[in-house]
Length: 167
Image (cartoon, rainbow, N blue to C red; front, side, top):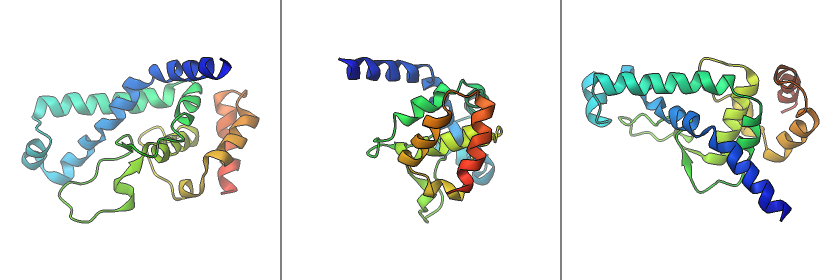
């Protein structure tokens, strides 16, 4: 019974972040400069108004993500075992390239760790994939987070800077 209640609490905890995660998936708007307007509009079935709306949604999601309460970390930790689904929260593959890179596709579990890192690294302008994140594990992060979870958001961020030095 306790497990069911915990699962329901975690699920409801994530509900409030759905619009942020959906907005982060609009990162494809960052490709317009690379692709050119006509190719972008054709590929993404877009026009200027849709591009403006999608860009605003993406930028608002970025801003809101960094302003969220620290319980967003608990929500992201629930994605630990989501290895079957690909995530579009981090980046959209450049569709005109025939090269496929590792960073073109992230599983939701990987994307969640990247978002946790960005949230705690205080890069409030974009989502960045830092090289050390490949070395981060859920078990290692959970040990860290378990120690500092009750601190204020900014204090957790300070401790996180020390944690990433150990990776």
